[in-house]
Each structure stands twice: as structure tokens, then as C-alpha cells.
Length: 302
Image (cartoon, rainbow, N blue to C red; front, side):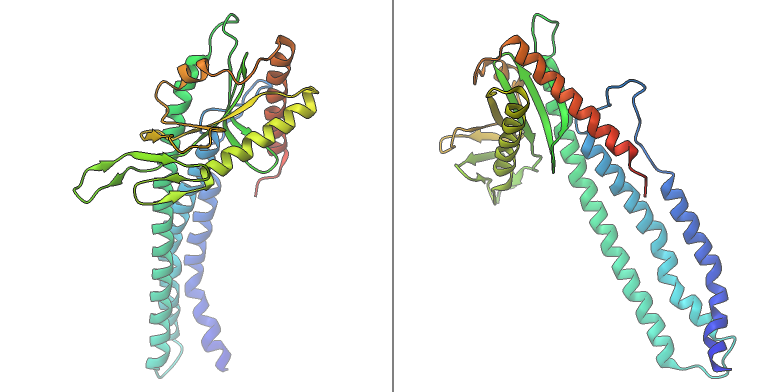
């Protein structure tokens, strides 16, 4: 029967399928998340980026391990066909070779994508950790009532940092951008802040300012609904490693490089918070982080 000539060679693919199953099973064992033994969730600087970096490494492992197995499958199937047919067709072997080549190219592109993604996430995480380390200088005893939250979840996105002070609440967004290189080989590290965009040496961006304003608007409305009074919220965009030119900036978003960040936040006074409102804001942010963390833990893992 002719159909057996195409069905029986599948036997040679079973060992490769078993190896693929082992690779997928090993990937599911990779889970770097840790849970706090207390009620408060573990939220470190760059926690969201850490999770994304773990996922990127997991994708790199999966594509790197499954790529050779899947790419060789057509050739292994073709060699199995040699045992059950009396006459070889060069067109059929050309199709096997073409399919294997396309699979190799596809997985190569996936590996390049994973590599670039990991590089971007590492740079972003390094900047998040640097800003978080600078913000830790704000934490003092009760006489110096500053409170810092990292990776505050909203309804649809995550705020990098929220700082609660006696003089208002600050929303901090961190953006990591590699320094530009000039035609003479020197690094160009100056960025000009305009009303709606950031003008870097070789490109411009609008999304960082938009995202910061979006976070300020969400937190302002959320706190006002729950506190019953308007709460002064100021947006701060941090670009570590860059020199900032704010000559043409709008002024509603403070754009800084991150150096002396704790001192800058201490000097800024967008308003005044009474002690009850100050404590209530801290309680609301802690409660929201705890509820969102519990919601994630209750979701079944895929």
C-alpha cells in the first residue's frame, strides 16, 4: 500500500519527538519567582523586568534546544523514506532540504530576536536597579517620613516607582537608552526635552513622556477617589547616563538623569499632605500591591 511508504518513516521521528518533550518539560522547571512568607509581596526594583528577563531566557533556551531537533526532522523523515521506496525522487529530496533550510533560518531569526531582547532588558534592569538604589537613600526613621514603592501595578500597566513624601507623591518612570555615537567615534549623551517628545542625538521619542503623564493621571484619579481629597502627584522621568536639556520642556514632567535623585525629590514640594492622608496613601498602595500579587498567585500556571 502506497500510504505505508509515507506513514512508516514516522517511526524515525519518535526519538526526536521524545527529545522535544524533554526540552519542553525542562523549560517548565525554570521559574525564578519567589514568594514572601509574610503578607507583604516581594517587590524589588525592576521586578517586572526580572520576570520578563526570565521569560526571555526561557524562550532562548527553548528556541536553541528545539531548533536543531525540528530543523533535522524533514531530513530524518526523508532518510526513513529511503528504506521503503525502491526509487528515489530528487524533487522530493529537494523539498526536504528546502524545508530544513527554512526551519534553520526561522529559528536563527528567533535566536537573534531573543538575544536582542535580552540585551535591552538587561540594560533596562541595570537602570532600574540604579534608580532604586538612589531612591533607597530616602528611607529614614519615622522623623523622615518617605516611603518608596517599586513596580506599582495599575489597571493596564506598571509604574516603575512611586515615592510618598510629606509634600506630595512622585511617579517615577525609568527609561534605559544606550548612548549615541558621533561621526568622530565619541559618545553623545545629551537629550533635549520638548513639550511632547525627547530629542536624542539621532532620534526622537514621544512615548516616555506620554507614559509618565499617563501614570500621573491614573494615580491622581485613583488616590482622589479613595482619599476623598485631591492629592498632589508629580511625574518624574529618569534617563540614567544622559545630560538633560530642559530649555524647551513643558514643566509638568521633570526629566532628570538620576544623579542626586534623592536630593532632588527632597527639595521638590508640589503640595502638602496631612499626616492622616500621608499614612492612608501608604496603606492604599501597600494594599493594592498585595491584592494584585495574590490575584497573580491564584491564576493557574500555563
